[in-house]
Image 1 (cartoon, each protein chain N blue to C red):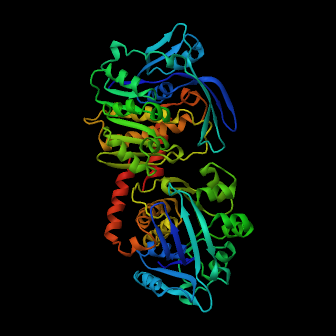
Image 2 (image 1 turned 90 degrees about the horizontal axis):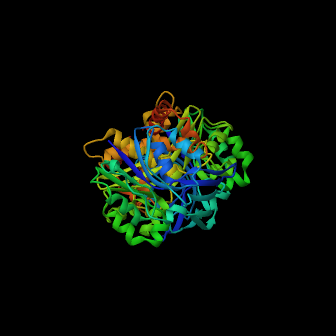
Length: 304
Length: 304
């Protein structure tokens, strides 16, 4: 069933303790779509400026399952740019610069042919824009949003309104704490459900993710790995794997506890590849056979 | 098969953001033994002073599976006392005071009747003392040690020597980082294996635990719970459940990857009860039926 993602396409400059990457392809929509593409087709709705490098366009084209018909290239606009630096343990990072570019302009438009998408993921952007994009689509089977500390701080009413319209929310544990004022992750998750969604997935980076669902809780560890080159995009890749696995399974009730729990495992595994290299480098040469192998390995690692 | 634990019995004063407990029963040996007792008999080797309150002795006696024949009450000595304060998120704590008492004296002696124990757990104490206690036992089927930052800092050679004598090590993730200088938990675990043990279990508190074993890795989340009153003793309870589940299963090779992985799940579940109240309060009225129920629930929460 058709999966659509809206979010950012960016040009990232990233410093890690061991290496750095300059002006590489990034953005929530990018990582989500690339990760999702291993499980099935994914429709991308996003905007870039006319400075978007041909090499980055070519990188996206290397993923045949990504439909870029919803990618707007705006004349006279600048592509979103972000610079970040990871601290020694790779778990915390600081933003070095942000150049909004097209992100400061009107949201992209959902193409007519995309409006029938059954699975919608609203990657991190202003919650008002997320709601606007969701409203452009016919009633999907499942809609899930991501968010970040910035919107919790400056656009809380919009975020709360959005939560009444989506089936699920995906966010980081510190964002869940910021939004709810609750330090206990389960409590924070339960409070978020009070705003409307049926489930919330709380991402904890190297510590895995927690599912707080109206019908139960699930906890999944991250894939234990030493090979962490760049954590950028791990959360978006996780969401991409989660949503794409769901759309491929296409169960009667895709928002059910057991559906989300299983899909989270695919999200975990696909995210573990992304962090092995900068940008989409690892995804560019990843095979589905490798994904399946690591999925089996992950099941073995977490089996009781 | 017979399980023996050596460690501390202490009198704890604990401050949490919500409540406090004064002069309650604590210590690594106490929590370990109480947790282990739900799965089978456990032999305790530890020392207290003659100031050890009768009420605390009575609390221990409420656990019929704990054999206290190795509990030395030393005339003229003081019981170990510890005061600690948990910060707002319950994940970090500071020590308010430490009164070593008997811990500054000679180690306790392993009673003759205990020397044939097959499963040995050396709870946190000076690694030289741990080695001395291990040497008092005949060759066990499985020996596992815990340690802490203090010994890593002031008794590293003793700790390294101990690691050549035990089958496994259990420690916190920040201690693993301190010991190895490696921020990646898997890398830190692998480095510890270079010192001799066949496996290391790295505890991550609310984020679960990681098994780094010569034959593979496993990752288990903590039991997701909102009911955290006092985390003191969670790690010792985890180890108690782990070792006691192993000794009950008593497989041909108790140090094998699959044995440890399964036993860790029991450790996780029993530890989740301990943190629901101060000291041994929750364990004192816990039934094995409740343990089994939560174990099933935990399996359901972590199933893919």
